[in-house]
Amino acid sequence: MRTSWADSVAAAENPATGSSANNGNWLSTSGADRSGYGAPSGGSNWGGGPRNDYSRSGYSGGGGGWNNRSGGWDRGREREVNPFGDDDPTEQEFGEQENTGINFDAYEDIPVETSGDNVPPPVNTFAEIDLGEALNQNIRRCKYVKPTPVQRHAIPISLAGRDLMACAQTGSGKTAAFCFPIISGIMKDQFAQRRPRGRVAFPLALILSPTRELSMQIHEEARKFAYQTGVKVVVAYGGAPISQQLRELERGVDILVATPGRLVDLLERARVSLELIKYLALDEADRMLDMGFEPQIRKIVEQMDMPPPGVRQTMLFSATFPKEIQRLASDFLSTYIFLAVGRVGSSTDLIVQRVEFVNEYDKRSHLMDLLHAQKANGVNGKTKKGADSLEHWLCTNGFPATTIHGDRTQQEREHALRSFKSGHTPILVATDVAARGLDIPHVAHVVNFDLPNDIDDYVHRIGRTGRAGKSGLATAFFNENNASMARPLTELMQEANQEVPAWLSRYAARSSYGGGKNRRSGGGRFGGRDFRRDSSFSRGGGADHYGGGSGYGASGGYSGGYGPGMTSAWD
Ligand SMILES: Nc1ncnc2c1ncn2[C@@H]1O[C@H](COP(=O)(O)OP(=O)(O)OP(=O)(O)O)[C@@H](O)[C@H]1O
Image 1 (cartoon, rainbow, N blue to C red):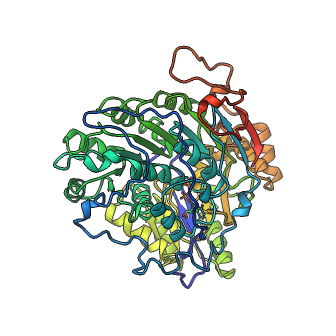
Image 2 (image 1 turned 60 degrees about the vertical axis):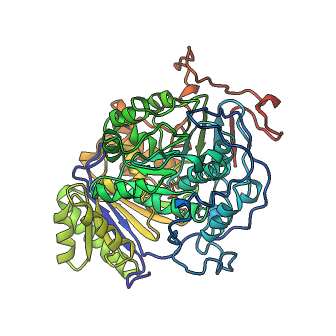
Image 3 (image 1 turned 90 degrees about the vertical axis):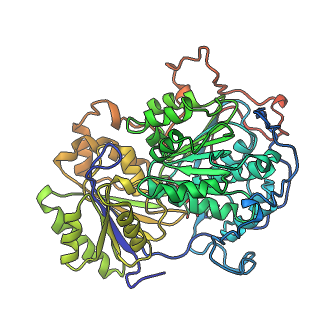
């Protein structure tokens, strides 16, 4: 999969789609391999936490023990395509190569903070968790040697049936952190096999994400994790023919991965019912609850037939969690645990961040210098932008580029992404439609050609590099127009032990926050901090309560080894 350019740069400009900031950024990639392989699991007990079982019509809740669900994946009538693409899955399963290139030790000293009542203790290995043999085998196939910090904490919490708001660095393995408990929960669920099949699909789990490409990616990952478990994963997103998605749904679905718009469409056509949802996961949850998506999410979660909080289990994940969004999100949760793991690649210094002062009219020639330098280093770049013109300009100047933004057709978007991922086109110019979640191996360089207006958007953009323990480089072009970013950028860089140019510090000293968006949501080393810790938080009446600072009682059903109710430790 590697290409002539060892790595590539993707640039993204930001014309319209998606979130608040409509500026550009750049990524770079070189395709190829990932991660490492993990020791086989042992098999201990389930978390056995205080999750309620929900008695719905005909649903008797899950019994104990493993449910082989032999008929689960289309009840044995269809052959499941091997998502690993190797026809002999036993080969390499317990393979020699483990996680080449991955430096997960970089995550070892990441700060972790949890708050809430009776927080289940973290695990150190996958072997400590009984996820079921089929899932364990897939973990080995994925070459995951050991859980990343967010997985170490989030998986036991979710397996114990607890609601969770988890804030963890970009590229740190959040997808698996919510997929594993969902898949193993469904595998254990006796009822799962007895659901009716027909025109209306009744998924047991719903995973929502803000962009089509991210939904596709989560679907691909989840299919790997669920391979041969009997758990069926289906994806539904806009811009693609609905008929095909309907056919897939009719064949049966356990986990539905969807973008909100297409899901609302399916619900309104009465082709999907959320009545049996046991697990709800929102990826990029802060984005899903900002102004752009909140009404659709409320409609899906609160106004259709989904079981309420406390009946279903809800998991919210993102690298950033502003307090005002946490407040909104708490409507969806019941007695939840807040988990914060580090910030960006920041604490681990995985991403080298540079800021250069570049006047608006100089940006293109500056970019050219950057790309030439990168090429000379044997590294290549791709860019994408709401910036077809930037793409065109790059191409005419000898830098093969493609672009992804909301004005392109879905087919064009997918083609651009494939071309960039494979290394065929080494530069991707992108808008914020590609800022979140996309996991493209070997992105060497993210260039913020136009800085966003929101520091959290910056965090997600630069997070397209420096993933899964690898190092990365991010360059931002800064000028007078970005004055409001000076202070949050300076703070973020300081936290991440980055060199802050003196001129940027001077800008920061002069500028004020002006309130709102760019007030840092994190507090220190985290991309978010439990808003319930604020003195202004009212505890009145709601289902949620916050047990900060307390110890754990045996009543939680856990067998020892608990930390304090709120921990702040270097993991
Ligand atoms: N335990 C593990 N061992 C090795 N690699 C892992 C492990 N868990 C996840 N990965 C790999 O790490 C990469 C990043 O994971 P993922 O895309 O889930 O990150 P993320 O936290 O969701 O990032 P973002 O905030 O950008 O959405 C993926 O390529 C994934 O396969």
